[in-house]
Image 1 (cartoon, rainbow, N blue to C red):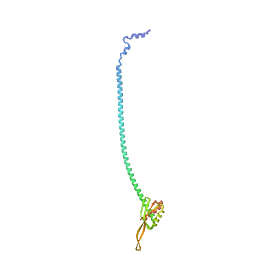
Image 2: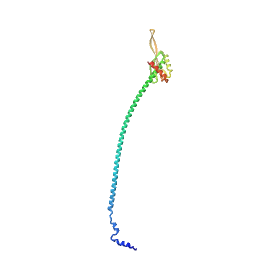
Image 3: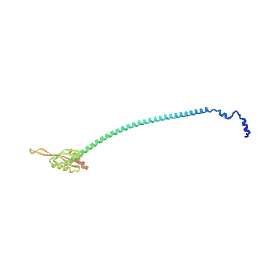
Length: 229
């Protein structure tokens, strides 16, 4: 193969004792690799330390936040407890007022019942004054609910029958019944001579209803007031 003059000159100028491949083979790369590994280790350690610092900081921050929230919750619990105690106190006062109101209402109801019973008694007395015959008198008048018990003395059985008939006329007197009729002897005198007379003790029961007519009830109450006075 024929060489050009330039190639021949370069070959002649290159020393034969210093080949190029011998220079490359004399370089030692072990210290560089160790330094590189150490640098990588330092970087990894710094990264881990930085990550640890960040984790510790985040943990401390989260603990602070949790403590703050716990304090807020404790404060709210205290506020709620005070409010509940205030509500319990108010509820107790309301219950006391309700009990007092119930007592007052019971008293008012009792007073109303007594007034109604007094009015009923006045009306009943006024009515009985027109119904009882002249030859008898009433010794006892009892009332339990709507049932009235009438006890008295009559001169004869005819007077008792007349009273039963009279009690059957008013619309607010129902079911008049003769429970008992007994003969009782009494000593008397006529023309200075002792006379033995017979009287009849009787007990009558009937059911009394309030009159529906207000004017009639007022008239009966007024009449009963006049009788009792």
